[in-house]
Amino acid sequence: MSFVEVTKYLLDGFWISLLIFAVTLLCGAPLGLPIAFCSMSRFKPVRYVSKVIVWIVRGVPLMLQIFIIFYVPGLLFDKPIFSELDRYFFKTYQIKDAGRIIAVLIAFTLNYACYFSEIYRGGIESISKGQYEAGYVLGLTKSQIFRKIILKQVIQRIVPPMSNEIITLIKDTALANCIVVSEIVMQAKKLAATKALVWPLFYTGVFYLLFVGLLTIILGKVEKKLSYFRS
Image (tube, rainbow, N blue to C red; front, side):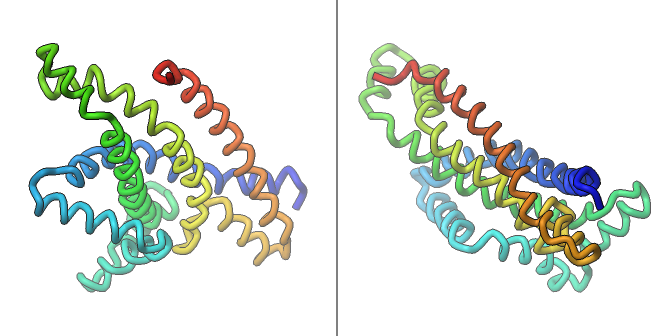
């Protein structure tokens, strides 16, 4: 295969990587906020349950979580749910790996939601109580204080750690190949197995580097725009 043909073949897998990245970010980032509020709840059972869940999800490797999401429902219900989804989507819509991708998306979303929740919690708790008290003096309600005073400062403070997690996320999409999802690394492995081409495995790094570079520029501009809170 020529260099151009290999590039096109790997791009087919990179679109899957980007899909996993985008859906995880769009679903995981919002989901992290209610988890953060649960972790800060004054109601102890809610707070403890939330913290235990976050501890488990952050403590167990993401690859193992993908295996759990993909295989455990089939073992519990004696029915390979995601494999059947694979067959259904391929038979009906000619879409490959749909069930496996759904399993990966569930695992990634839950995993990153827990990581994002800790970033949110740290950002919210870093705001001094004096700012809440000042808001009450001005006659603002608790929700108004959060929206008008606290939220923008929290966003500014969480951008750097969120940026690190977002960059890590695009690299973690390679873990999807553990259940044979045809993302870019899996595509390169197929070339190694069928065409005896090893160099595409190393070539995949170029795709990640370029995308990470683009993300770094975008996130750097976002951070610069939010620098108005710096003293």
